[in-house]
Image (cartoon, rainbow, N blue to C red; front, side, top):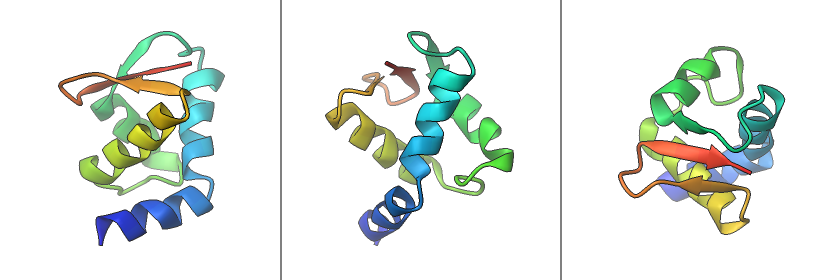
Length: 79
């Protein structure tokens, strides 16, 4: 079920919004925690999204080489 939620979020520009936070806020190349991203989500498409769904979306960005999720799954670096 979580997989289908991620697919819907991707179709609704979820990943694009995550990338905009990383690039638009000058965070490209720096590390952000998932908690920080969830807090940024107050006025974004990912408002109310669970930690697990956010992590899955970030893993998709990692597959596209647009982000790196760290081993402990508690931080991300946007490229």
